[in-house]
Length: 612
Image (cartoon, rainbow, N blue to C red; front, side, top):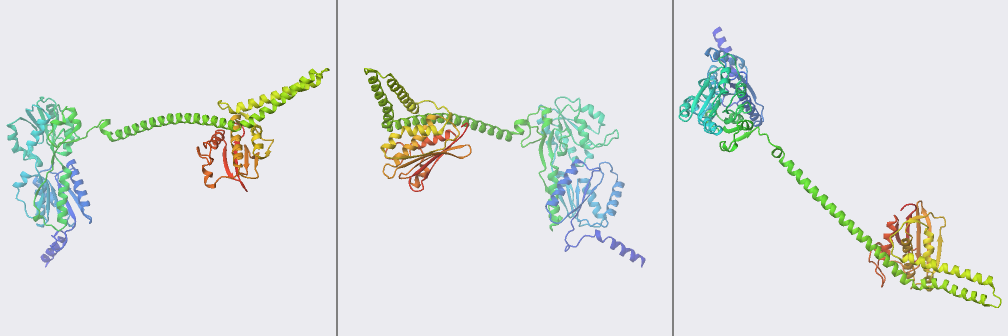
């Protein structure tokens, strides 16, 4: 009975490790075995790629365990038995669905572990085995994986590219027969020795190696495999040992593993460790999807690629054109142009566009400045022509204004002569007549000077100006026109207006144009009333209003009334009101028009007091 209980107990305890039935889904638990303790850079990169690919390819969480076998340091059969026992007990209560074995030693260990676990159908996926070795293996059932091919021929091709006239290759590292990944190199050396001399530096202590690699001839290259065990007793990480040797090596170093880059290796046909991890993970994902390891063939992957360290190429003055076709260059230190080409192009383009824009703006500013000068000159010329045209229209009024004092002069002169030629000359009356002549002469001179100033062509001069005096001067000039056209004049001038800064002639022209327009607008209507008013409706502004009782302006034309060349008259150029607007705005003011309440139009303008 006790014997039967023990058997039952063993059976129950071993249930978690029993192979799942075909109907049950495979549990998503992976045990990864590798030969390294501690982890090497190679396995670290392999495991990272393997793990990330599994996570990306599965919606269900996958548990991954990792165990280092320590075969780099411990190789006794007794040690392997202890490790198997340890793993068996460690995972006794943990269902393992797939074993991943990295390297030949790990594969052999996984097969023996599977036997001890009494799980002959437990799938094993291997990696890190050369295909020439894999072809010689008699793989048990449910074992599959990926292989690669690295050969000494790759080493020879690389060495010849790095060293023109190559005659010898110094092989550095642990003895090849002790290296899992490179045992097949031993058989290939005989072929290489027919082409170049091989200098065997494997198994030497580090001090001796440093001396030897520092004194190699110029026609030599170094092939570094992996150095972990020095006869001096020190243990090295393979990549750290490479960096120590590269410090003193006088020739370029050929490598066959990606993780050696950046540690002193110049380059070579290297294993792409990340790609191996990804391919291995894809096989595991296939198993989790329901495939059987026995139906998945061993896959030969293209995991070898020529890759070189740009810094080492520069150190040994090796041109990229001499490298094998398809070579990848890493750690390239780009110059300013190579590193920031896009930024430089964009910045240069922006600067060129900015320069072109600035040049165009300068051209436009100069062109606009010339156009403004021409426009001002044209406006000044048109303004002068407008005044001359007004002079022609006012010729009768001007003649009348001048004739009045001249007639007075003639009359008074005749009277003075009579008083002086009398039998008894009346000197007092003659003196009074002569004084009247002087006054009339002065008045005629003032009229001529005023008209001349108004119609001459001089540059504008802004001075303190009384707007009421401007209005009075204009009204005196058009007095005859008002009488001739039977126009009633109504004036309402604020005598307390502050002065404005302006050109008297130009302001007179504005008032004259508006008054003459009002007179002309009333030629066909009755009654004819012209109202002129000045006031200060707003602080700091002088306001002038000129209202007529004429035919008015069509409301549809109000917005065009101040545009150049627009006119509703049968005669005229349509420049008068445009000139008025230009003059008022040049004085900092504004001008506008509106319909009168009953009939006619109201023209108004405002000018600022003080400086214009």
